[in-house]
Image (tube, rainbow, N blue to C red; front, side, top):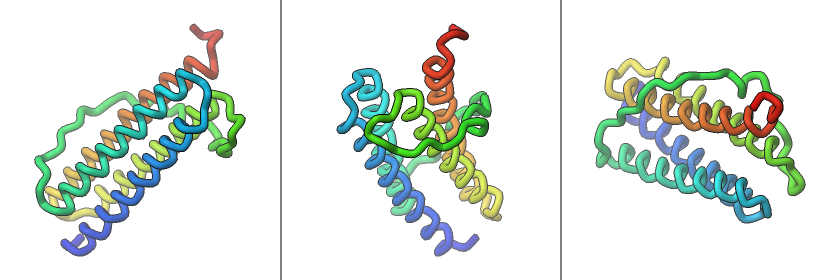
Length: 151
């Protein structure tokens, strides 16, 4: 992967973070459920932070990323992607966010696999771990909300 390809991927990743932040902010703005407001407000802020971090990489201003490996419960892989609607149940809203984080994680994993530059590969692997940590957090929330009888 050459420098121009890397920059194009970073631009696309920045756009994805903007879209994710807008999606989460939209859910935050429209929901009346206090716990969903809290969750989606935090997610929107995190995605805005990711955008700034990626812009730093794009402009060669960022420090190296370091994200720990987290458990992957694979809950998102077993859940259908719900359609966004104004009358979504909280568990469905979490499932939708969980699927979006899964897609982002898989995208970064694919970029890491396609990269022959060690620094770029490490960047994408760390971004994938970052998205995986969000997915894991959402999977925990989803399991609690969708299957309260387990708790």
